Image (cartoon, rainbow, N blue to C red; front, side):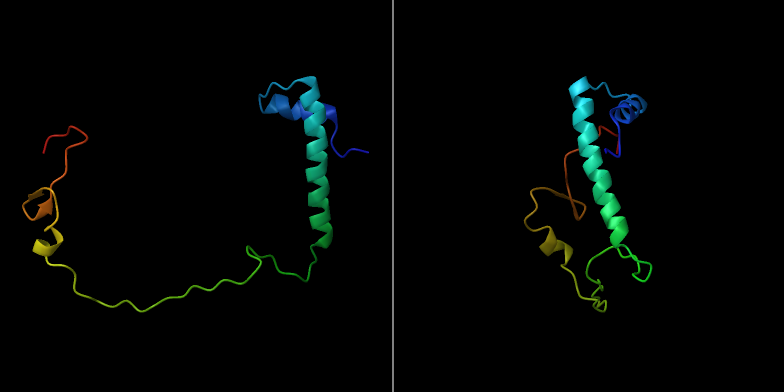
Length: 99
């Protein structure tokens, strides 16, 4: 016996404001029945002694210490720029705002 009926699919479609044809109701009822069965199988496997997890394998972050390193001097950083103004990259105005 199906866990979800054609009428329940029609009700869900109305709540979702979806217009479904008669053959779609049957098709989705079968698909939702498979989904509900899969969720039920997962619920059977889940045991109280197994803690919930978000990943199959444990994850650990790898951090390195922050180190201050010298950056490029402005002249070197701007050397290949197509346009420079006041030691900054000059880019075309895109929003039409006043400067």
